[in-house]
Image (cartoon, rainbow, N blue to C red; front, side, top):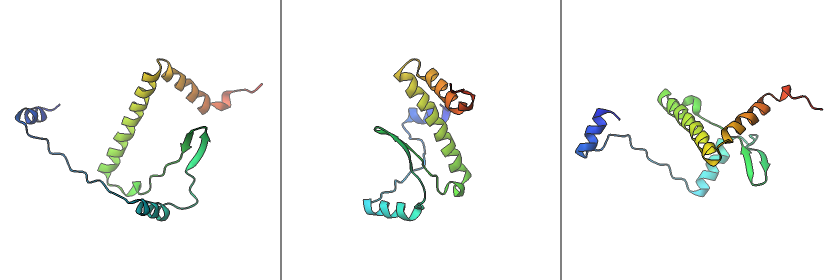
Length: 115
């Protein structure tokens, strides 16, 4: 924590953060937005196994974002990856090792020789 933030905390002043105004959609508005924004030929549901699903998400408009917002998105992505590892590690002591083995098998499936 920076000295300025420590001093602000001690004096009771709040730090100056940009305000974020949430966007509210009504159900019909959101459906209309999705219908007009996403081409019909896009595939979202890639695979389903029991109650789990693998979905494809699209980042429409990412290229038009300012560099500052792209950088924020990258940092959020990195935080999500770190959070994923923490989640796996907390569930079982060997989950990270098992995930590494499974990812290696999937990414190097050409090394496997079926008998």
